[in-house]
Length: 287
Image (cartoon, rainbow, N blue to C red; front, side, top):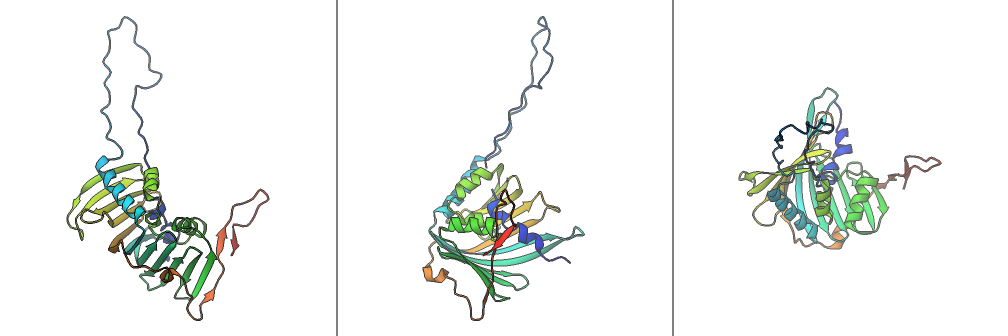
């Protein structure tokens, strides 16, 4: 049976791929149609019924409210319990799981502790000066100096280092703009009364994924559940996440977000993808 290689490549998408306004074309008469003779009586041309807007206003209001809440929060903590499909060579889908405890402290503090369903544990931290990635089971870590904000670090982790950071889009302060740029359709499904708190259930599409999101109607408009379908991948695998223990005002000290390697931990190099030059170069370089 294959291991979860698919997720290593694709679990970043919920974040960076989740959610842009795309206009819809007006339908007109077919081009090149022959004009009627001048003495023919006027003809009534039936017009197609107006199409429903691709972006439902009520749904967009709910989603924007959630995006603004997260983007404007200076700090928060949350626990994410997720599951994801790995499509086997036979076409069978196997579900794996993970739990992540996330601490964010703007502008430059981030800590993500993760445990997979097989028990493997990992840690990613950023303190405004360096990004550290720790594999607890092998007691190895990689570290690279990188100054900047959380936005800078998240993009660098995902795009350059290709570190798994599911739902990373929810971490960046540009979340409202990112959603608007990616959304193709968005609909309001229902008021769901069976979630932990009542939620507004939305469904939308981007170029690469279909997604559903459940946003709390009581208290801060925070996500309670997300489901993402990778419609362009074989077998259309899904990623599912449930959020709990939201805290928008935790007591977070910068020292808590600094990485201190455990005794005996070995530092290993990081492979960084580099652009190919005209003369040609390797795909990555150790750091």
